[in-house]
Structures are given as structure tokens and as C-alpha cells.
Image 1 (cartoon, rainbow, N blue to C red):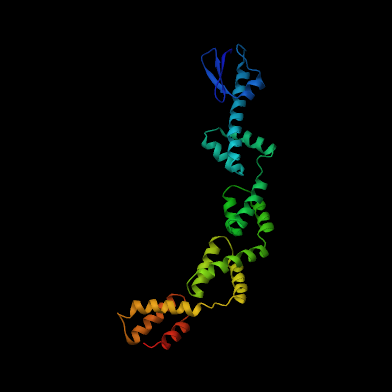
Image 2 (image 1 turned 60 degrees about the vertical axis):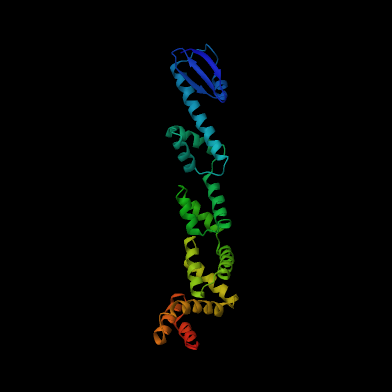
Length: 261
């Protein structure tokens, strides 16, 4: 099959064949196979050139994708599949990227665990789940989590988070602990480590605002029920509301009984 014409386009070259068909190749493919006008190509040569160009084209797309950040093998596979590239071509591209060091799942795991923990403040279980979803090796994930998310590092991180969250919340101690615990648990920390850090935190922290917060909640409850209830029923409603707000029964009862109602 003879090449009748080679036309340079913006990115690639158009190769016209004597049977009226054509295909596109990169400059590297032109050089590799010595493609020139009027050259004769066998069916096997033509098949090899087209197959090579398919891999090179997919490889270029993958390299471009890698410029925007670290990727996993699964990331590359899914990206190229969306480009409707054949799986056998994708396999070759991934193998080539691994060989030249552009793709390394172990390095990806180490970098991801570091970023998720130190920058995103995520705990081990959140990180593990996230990386398993990317098709990464569980043993490699767990090894890096153990190395990076040490108990000492988690205690230091959680202490700062708890200190910040606790001071800005205008709620009862119980409510604060409950909501902060739920947030940290959702972010992948175990209840044991959360509880341990809260114990350390409360050894250092004196909640000087607890009485002030109790006053605020009482005033809101008073405004809500004073027009609808009186006497014993009024007191019971106030106590019940304070309990729902997170105060203990004895704290709520003692406070209400001290008020001039």
C-alpha cells in the first residue's frame, strides 16, 4: 500500500493512502518508521504503525493528565477509558508510565496519606476508605497510615481541633463534646483516641463560660414558656428544655429552683 501524500497539520500529520483511506500520526511516528511520500507499506507494517500511533496518542493524553497532579493506575485507566481508548492500549500506556517512573502507586499512597492527614485533617479510617476506593493496595495504605498517623501526631492534631471548636461553640459542655466527637468520628478518627484527647483537654481547660451559657439557655427557655405555663408546670418545662439543651438533670433542676419564679 503506497503513501500518496503526507500533510502537516497543527499537531499531527495526515497520511493518505492509494486506496483513498487516511490516518493521522505524530512526528515521532513519522521519524520512527521513516514515512515519506510514495513509500510502500505492507499490511503488517501499516497495522504496526497504526497500533504504535494509538499507544503514543494515548500516552500523550496520559502525560498531559499527569501534569495536573499525582495519579493512580486506576485514575489513568478511568481517564483513558472515557476517551474511548481500547483496554489493551491502556495497559501498554500504564506499563510505559510505570517503567519511566511517571506512575507509582506506592509514592501516590505516601503523598496522599500525608496530605489527607496534615492538610485535610482526616483520620486513618477516612484515609483508608478513600484510598481503597482508588484501587490501591491495602497493605501499602495501612503501612503508610501507621507511619504517618501516629498516636502522638493524632493527639497533637485533635487537641488543637478540640480546643478551637470547643471555645467557639455557645453550647453546653455535653453538647459540645457530642458534636465535636461526631465530627471527628466522621473524619476517620476512632472514638477511643477522641475520648483520650478530650480527657487530656479537660485536664488543662477550665470552662469559665459554663454559667454564662446556662444563663443564656435559661433566658431563651423562659421567653419561650413564660406566656404558656405557670407554677409547677412552668418549672418542669424549663427543666426539660435545659436537659434537652445538654445540661444534666441536677444542674437544670438546681438552677431553675434558685430562680425567683
